[in-house]
Image (tube, helix red, strand yellow):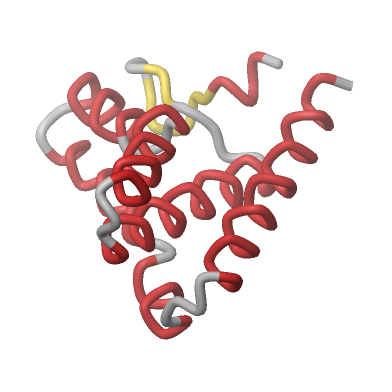
Amino acid sequence: MVKKLIHVEGLVVLFVAMYMYYINDFSWWLFILLLLAPDLSALAYLLNVRLGAQVYNLFHTYAVSVLVTLIGVAVELDLMYMIGLIWTAHIGMDRLLGYGLKYSSSFKETHMQKI
């Protein structure tokens, strides 16, 4: 049941981020272009597993993406607002699909498996 709730939560976050993006009439080309950009953080795994997990998790936690979104709104910087929404949508999409935060033991070991 908990795992299903996280999937539903991801769906809701994805739709809310996309809806906010839509009502602000932001560029959908930029959305499509940047939607998978947070996954580039996985390149840190080339250095070592522990650092890879830390960098990946930093780019896949709502705390950071929502903070970027809120700062973009607060300072009225549309580009930052767009990036924050796209980033948040990405994390929601990941949770919807069952991808989670990584443990430092292995790239394939995530918090979603522990639930």
